[in-house]
Length: 556
Image (cartoon, rainbow, N blue to C red; front, top):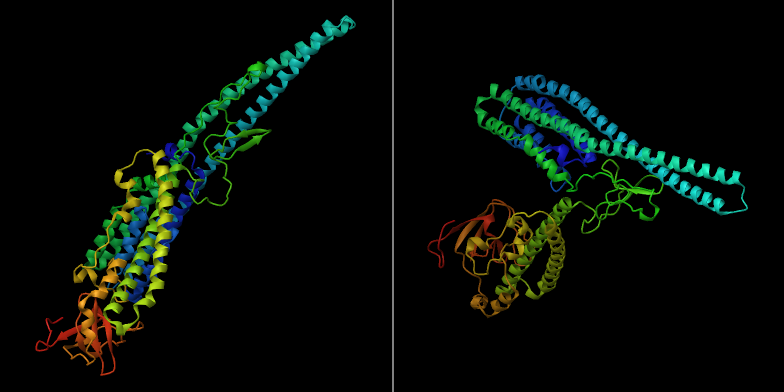
């Protein structure tokens, strides 16, 4: 596993990644510095600090925290939430043993990084110069061959003309010989420069670049190890003065020891590897044979790889998109066809996962509406079931659109995976797991049907079951217009705003009467007075049923 061989064409990405690594280290230094500043303000400010440095949800920064060193940093922040008290000596020790030491190391790291990438650019400029010399020599050889042919044809024409003097014929013959000699000299020069370029190119891709990238990899791995060592020091500073929080500190040490610089390097390869091979040697193109001149398939003048733009080093010759030339930026195609195969597969898989999450969200919304409609069907006084049909149809239409979109991206993903090396069957079917899952039926047990405090449900219910509810015996429950007797009391654990028809608002700590206990749908029917009654989520109240009341079963 080496960046020099695996990431030979990712110069710009490595430059960005190493800069990002320094930024992470500087962020960690800043974190420790702020930690020392708020030591005296105790646990509350420590928890705020931990929250401040957590990566943002659904952002690029969150994706960057897949590296083990960053995960260890997050674990450190989480462990800080359990801190109860600190001493001033913690602030002093962290400032001297971590901040000062890491700040000095960051400066050294910046100088080393600058030197390595300077060598890389210097090697790039050298190979570009060699390429331009080769193109110039090739054009000169081609031009001299054409002029030699014209001089020979002119000599033969003069020699065949009886009206031309012998002196003119001799002059034409000498001129033809000179042109032929110039063509031979150009041929020798072109051959020599070609051999030199192939040698330089081989050294560039197999010696210079691998050596430079190896140094960059070692530098980056040292940074990762150093960051882990700093985290250990961070933990030990606390351990010296706060033995009672040793468990939290052990967690930080464990996170630091979980850092694996080789694993982080492999993640970089997986993130930036294009899958392309380095270019091969350029074949000799013999311009002395006019009728057999062909363009070499291995020449740099041919673009290699489908969809690759051409690069011009000089003249009219088109060149391959070299790794050290910046790519043109444009609109990203919907199928990510502008990316290398491996990167395209990752983007498509990510898109499929996002669509599946959106589908699940829409299905949860549909389940909530369906459940509310079921409540309306059973209890007509709570609301009109038909009022939810439009919203239900709209959500179902959104689900269908999202499924079609998912199928499109899954088809592109299958096409890409068909061209990539074989992967595990589980990974290939990952994007299709969602459709293979069967939703729970309407007859699930009570704990499976419990709703969240906001009234949403996770139970799947079909349209057919909604119609069948009309034929149930629940309608008979509400034929009697007399108010239901109280079967117990309940105390509101939380405040609930009853905004939907059929629900009732309660305030935390309020005591009310229970007139109908939870039948498994997550709702309890309560009464405040003779005119105010409705449903509240069962999880929002503590119910005490009267054992002597009719229908009372338990004490919650």
